[in-house]
Every structure is written in structure tokens, then in C-alpha cells.
Image (cartoon, rainbow, N blue to C red):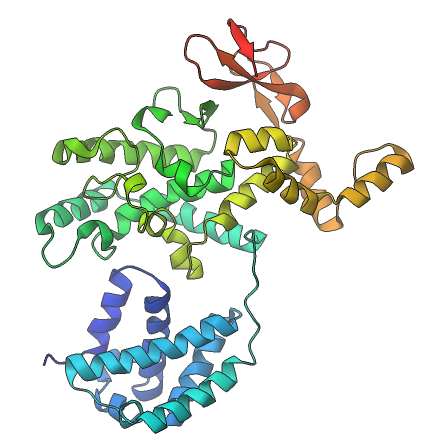
Length: 408
């Protein structure tokens, strides 16, 4: 059996994929080195793992609960317990390090009962249908930091390494340890599209190479062509397109789909792994990749900015009732009716939303066809379809797109 080294193991945790298990193992490592070697990994002795008592394990759970000052839920606390148990089982089998507590069934169950009593006091996980403003800020800050320190050569090196290793012992397209940087770049695109346009995972994965207009800086989403105004999304697309074209050299059979795994497999044909790659940034920050929370946020922002529920439904290919439920959360029907008959004015919104709504509805948009600046509300815009290309476009109501068209 190979010798276990906590310092090396910790580095592997940070070099590889970030998921719920590795995130909690990093905290356990920090507890171990703080508890037994005064924060110095070089001084840590494996005998400490053997001598760890029931109170030490309980202490490590409390350390995790208080870690970083972030609020932990009952579910995340229970997962930490499972992670610790799995770790001690692994070091016993792989490295011959045996802690008697986990070897004895009765003592293990007794410890587990005490740990579960602690986690039962934690708050139950909320079933959130949308990310909070704080989580939105975290994601945006992470993306900004990532793109500002981005070095294209790092991803090229990662691609070369993955290609050279081929499928020795694992399938590279499913192993994020090899493709951390590459997958993060894809995730920036997917996360941004969800937050800006409310686009769900299937539609992101179905994008074709010609759906992104590199010269015009446009995106075709569900047959609607829109300008890419967000600088970070535009930058991510530009970088990715260079790498995508290089991958075509190695995998010419990868086809016309825009987003592919590092072995050229279109994400659209990877149902089990698609979300792990598209939303790995969420995994790194929040320990999950529930994409619905992202694209619901994007849809709510479009509603706030004045795009009607029907238009949002068409653009995002979402049932109108789903969009109206989101709209109802913003402006409850009961309040709208009372407000209408009270002063025949716009519906009132909660104080926490009203200030952001006022600022957001002040934004304007430039019409791609006549060049006039119009308020970013549905009263000034319409969907048009041109006979020449069959795509659906957004134009202002004044010029109606100028070209021959049939209005939608």
C-alpha cells in the first residue's frame, strides 16, 4: 500500500474538479492540520488519523459548520458526515490507516447518532427557484476574476495533456480533473447566457457553430438574433471559438455543435454530464449545479426591464404559465388589480424591488435597423421575421425592421 500524505492529498483536491465531496474534504484537511500540526502540513503525522477520537470527529463537524462564516444547512451538514465516513473507509483500504471508531460498527453508529443530532439543529434547505442577489454577485465576481487573469495558453496546455493521455483508465470527457480550465470557460458562457437571457441548459447545448456571429457579435437563440452586449460573454465566446476551431483539427467529426467536451463530443449528446460541465462554476461556488435557479433569474430580469411575458416565453421556449408564475411573484395580481382601480397607475412592487426596477427600466436599446435609441420596454419593440433567412429578429416598432418581412 502507498503512503498517505495529507499535504499532497490536499493539493490534489484543489488541482482537480470541485464538487460537493472535494469541497468538504478541503475543510476536513484544514481542520486536521489546525488541530494536530499547528497549521503546518509538513509536520502532520498520519498517526493522528488513527488516534482521532469521537470528540475530534464531532469537533471537525462544528469546525465545518462555522467555516467561512457561511450558513450551513442540515443537508450539507449530513453530507459532511458522509464525506468523513467515506474518507476514513478510503484511507483504510488504500493506505492501511485504520481508525478503530470506523472499524467497529457499534462505535460508528453511536458517533453517527451524535453527529446527526448536531446537524438536526441546522436550518432545513430552502427550495429556491432562483438565485439570490448575493449569489448573482458572487457568480459575476468569480467570472470577472477568472477572465481578468485568463491565459489562453493554460487551456491549450490542458487540451494537449488530455489528448495525449487519451482514455487510459478513464474517459477524459467525464473526468473534470483533466479539464478544469476548459470546462470553466464553457461554464462562463452557459452561466452568462442563463443570467442574461434566461436560456436553459438544453438550448445552450443545442447551439450550432453558426449561431454565434463572430464579426457581427450576435447570437441566434431559438431563431431570434440578438446583439451580444455583455463584454464578458463576448470575450468568453471569442476565446472559446479559437479553441473550438483548434479542436476541429483533432476531432473533425465533432460536427456543427458549438459547445463540445474536450474530446470533441457535443455536449448535446452527453445527457448525464452536460450540466456538470455547463454549470461547474456553480459547483465550485455553491456545491451544486441547479441551472434552473440561474435561468429563472434571467427571466425575472427581462420581466423587470419591461419585456412582456409572452415575448419572454417565445424567446426562452418556456410555457407561458411558467413565465406568468414568475411575473406573479414580482407583481402579485391582487396588488395589480387594487392599484389599477385605485389610481390607474403602474402596479406597485415591494420596496426592495422598486428601486432596482426604476433603475433598470431607465435602460435603452439601439435598434439594429434604423439606429434609433428606444426605451428597453415591450411597448417600443417587436419581433419580425425576414423572408430571406426565416429567422426571428428584434426591431423597434417605428421602423419594423425596414426589410420585407412578415410580422410575428
